[in-house]
Image 1 (cartoon, protein in one colour):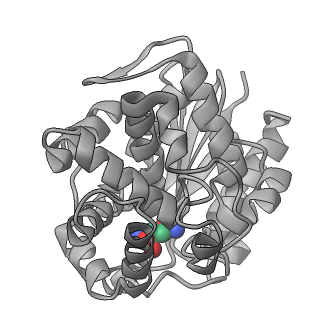
Image 2 (cartoon, helix red, strand yellow):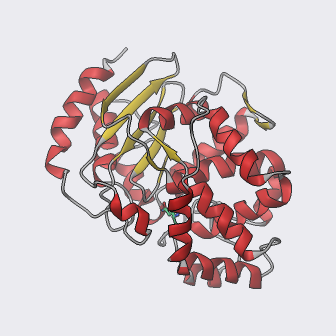
Length: 305
Ligand code: GLN
C-alpha cells in the first residue's frame, strides 16, 4: 500500500507556486467573500483509512459537485427513463451554456451542466414527497454526517444574480422539459448547490462510488453496481465540462468539480478523494485541486487508465 501521507505532503510542496493563480467565483456574491488562498485535500480509502492535508476541516460550498448526488437520486427513482429528459454526452461547452440548450431543443447534453442539473431538480421535485428534506437527508446519509446543511444565504445570493440559470430554466420550460414551477425548481437547484462540506466529508460522500463491493443503499435511494459504474462514466466524460478532456488526460479519475473550488473524485476499488481550493481556471475548475489530483495519480502510478 502506498503511503498517501507522504504523497500528500509532496503534492502540497509541488503545488505551492499555484497558490495565487486563478480567480474565485464571484458571480455568486456570497462566494466572493471566501478567502481564495486555501487548499485542502483528503483521501478516504475503501478500508476506511483517512489521510488529509491542509484546510481539510473548513467547509465550502460544494456547488456543482452536488450534481453527483442529484444524479444518483434521479437515476435510482427513474431508472433508464431518465435519459428521455437529459443526455449523457460531453458538452464541450461552458457549464452554463444557453446556446447549446437551444440547439439541442431543450434536452440538456448531460446531467452535470447546469441545464441538466436543473432538469434533475425538476425530476426530484416531482418524485420526492419532501424534496428539500429528502435531498438533504440523502446527502447526510451518504456522507454519514448529520451536521451537513444547506447554506441559505449562498442560495439566495445566487438566486439574486442567477440570470443565466433563470434563462436556462425558462428555455427548458418553453421546450416542455420542466414540469414544475420555474421559480420553485430554481430555488431547489440553488439550495442543492449551496450545501457545505469540508474535504473529509466530501471524500466520505464519494466513497460509495469507489466501493462497489458494498451495496449502494442510502435511505430509499438504491443503485445497482452497474448504475454506480455508469455514474462514474458520466463523471469521467462530463464532470469537468469543456475541461473534461484535459482533466482526463492529466488526472485519469472519474470526478466532479464545483465553482466553490471543490472536487470529488474516485479511484475504483481503492479510494475517494476530495480537494478544495477556491481559485478557478477559465473553465470554472479549481487550479490547485486539478494539479493536486494530477500529481496524485502521477506520484502513485495509479489511475483508471
Ligand atoms: N450553482 C452554480 C451555478 O449554477 C454551479 C456551477 C458550478 O459549480 N459549475 O452556476
